[in-house]
Structures are given as C-alpha cells and as structure tokens.
Image (spheres, rainbow, N blue to C red):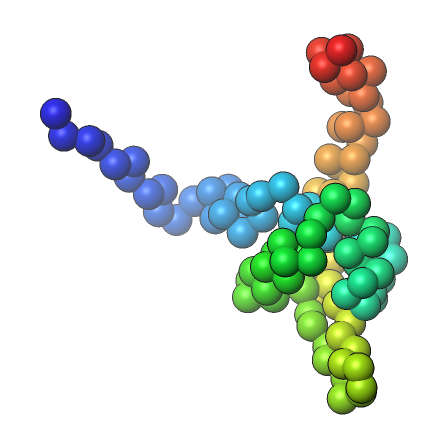
Length: 115
C-alpha cells in the first residue's frame, strides 16, 4: 500500500508563519527580547527558563535566518554577543500580547484540566 505524503500548502501566509515560529522556544525568546530589549546570550538563557544553551543557539540562528532576531558580536575577550529584535521581530508584539492575554484569561480552566 503506497504511503501518501501530505502536499505542501503553497502560498499560505498562515502556514509560512507557523513554519517560521514553530517549536517550543521561539515565542519565549521573542517574548523575552520584547520585554527586556537587547540581551546578552547568558541573560537571555537565564530569562528563558528551561532552555539549554545548545537549543538557544539553534533557535537564535533560525530566528536570525528569518530576520526576526539581530545578532551583534563585539570584538572583546571573552567574546560578547548581544541579541535584539529586528523591526520584523518587534512587529510580533501584538501576537505575543494576544497569546499572553489568552493565557491569563484561561489560566484557571487550563490548570483544572491538568490537575
């Protein structure tokens, strides 16, 4: 029996956006940079609770590739790198705020389902 592969959805902005922002950590990273502005790597790692250094590096690289995060290295010893949101990244603020508002509004119902 042949296995049917899912056809890619072409020219769908919703799907394209999900592809860029998929994963457990991207929204947390964007939220942290929106809240704090420019952060050094270790500060960002501390602020995004539970993320490993390796995963943070991976996610930051992907966010850079998509033009959401700007990486600014400085020629210091030890090396200093700062991360901030690009204008495109800052444009996600209403989305992040809506997700947070939804979480606040539904916190009790969500907690009741877990317990």
